[in-house]
Image (cartoon, rainbow, N blue to C red; front, side):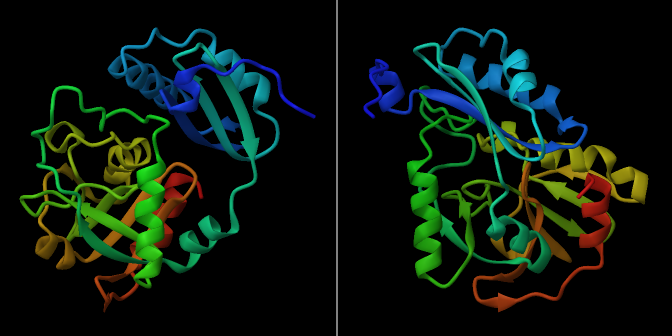
Length: 247
């Protein structure tokens, strides 16, 4: 059957924003933070604030899984739930092999129209980057700035542990998407005796860390077990931090 619903150019071109949440038995995890980022992303794209987003999420929040809410310039506001992909569960359990790659941009010096800090629907290049990493024998990659700083992964934030200090990249300094899971993890890290710091990190500094993870809402944490072909020992902190996040 042909879908005759009119489609706006904005919908076809990915001119919109979205959020993906971990739907748990007690509801969408960190919902308030996700709705706040949805509104902030919309503002960065000069779109009106989404209306009734919480109501749409509540209506769709049945069962458990990955919940996605999409908001486009045409006014489309849609929420849906799907199963968590087996690959995500495997990465959370077994860890991931990661390579680094230059993004070709400066940390913190972007053009005035840049929307890196928005979670926009234009994710084609993000998934192209992951497919390229797969062809190199890796599961994912970490983007580097022209100055050599680690930024983020295509669909996750970078988190690392050095001694008793848990770190992530400061979104405001690096002009990257603010990671909700990473921010929440750092906020609760003191409860298990860890200091929490946002700071920039070079690739050699990151490689010297005691542990590295990619963090995202549905993935939780996936430990980096290989960086640029160099194997890394598993960290005893991985199960502790996953438990802290409720995974």
